Length: 64
Figure 1 (cartoon, rainbow, N blue to C red):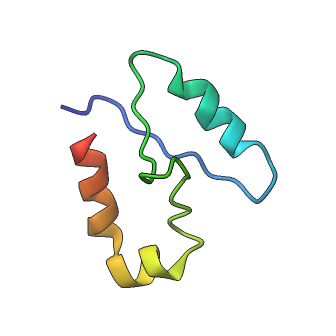
Figure 2 (cartoon, rainbow, N blue to C red; figure 1 turned 30 degrees about the vertical axis):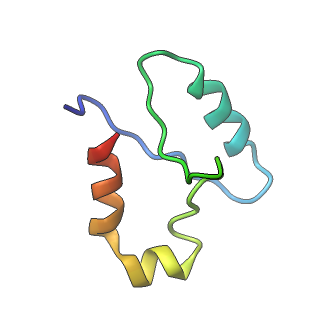
């Protein structure tokens, strides 16, 4: 069960990857990443945002 949820938002080259990699080491934090380890960039990539939709993203959160 998810107790707390947050999204890391930021522009290119502003430290979001560093932040997510730092949080990854915490035992009580789960991150949603692609199989190759990269972030989804959900709102930047039309493939995820427009074609797969918000419900697809919510399902990713529920699985983690």
